[in-house]
Image: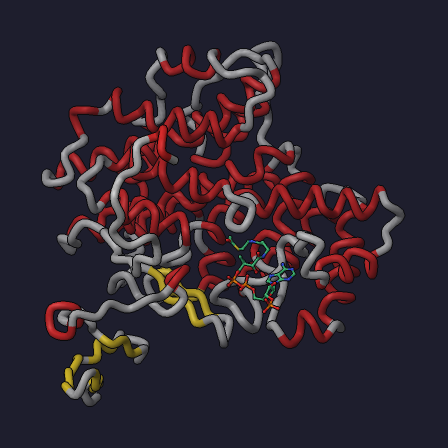
Length: 426
Ligand code: ACO
């Protein structure tokens, strides 16, 4: 492909095109400022590729999502979350022996430093579980200084394993603290998801049998959330890591970004919105109209996506799973019916159609989490558990590519130079 030419102030500048393996082109403006003195202005990075990446491909127009080339539909049907985590981290599906070793490594590293319990105990019982999760992951940097050097590959590998192995227990301790129940331990004889379920919902007073339907469904949800290229939280992890901050604290930054209601926090907001509509008599049109009203400060949560402008393939899979799981668990949730009718009503409305606003991954996931017994304020924690392999893989890729420190420019619009006025004269 030809270079891109920019003419400014009578001078012409040439910029090469970088073309990806799926034929997407990007103008490489690396020499823009040094040549022309100009920068680009792109609030929200709507048009900006911050990096090349070989982890995840998505095509928002066609509704395509692939991890390392594998379609999400195939991974959802045939793979497991731990296998997907390996795939994201290493770029290839593991052999049976590699998978077994990876599972054993995670199980062997799953015990969280005991003193971290004190951190949880310092939180009010009403604390949001995302606040506890972020604090605990950040605290892990203090317990893992022996593996915190990004320049030593063996330390990066060990830090990745410890974080992947321990996040489920940290999530479960947030739940236990809120419930004022004893903190539990992982069960290394169980698989990753079963151990999480047991440490979260089990009690020392009774045996805990993992329901296979619940385990499989949670595993599916984690697969669907495992990566989504340069989204807000992943970009945050990469930019924090670009300062050579350690993996734990970089991921903590991603957890903060994920918590926002426009990102991973939307799953909690969706359920609260559905409850609100249900308790208000189920008048869907009222809330669709409210979402269209620019003065109302109300959006249909779980609708719309920066990249997907046709459909979100994850939402399609989750919607199907929702019907199946609720039927198998014999749960009749009026919110599922309400959600389906809300989708129908919105998708008949020109406001949503013309803006290409479709249900996203968060629209139906909350109904499943609820059916699995997970409290609403834990939904975003579940998202974080799923997204962790993506964050870690992107941090490692950023590190391996020797990405320069993330430091955007700005166009300054404030006051020009003026003299200081002593306070008595203001
Ligand atoms: N309800 C009502 N209107 C909406 C919605 C919505 N959910 N989403 C977008 N719009 C409207 C905007 O008001 C805007 O209208 P305008 O052109 O008349 O001004 C137009 O659609 C474009 O919206 P933007 O906010 O510019 O789109 P952007 O790409 O910046 O935002 C986002 C994407 C944040 C996901 C947005 O659609 C949204 O807020 N959705 C609700 C929150 C949500 O579900 N977030 C989860 C996203 S998936 C994830 O992060 C895991």
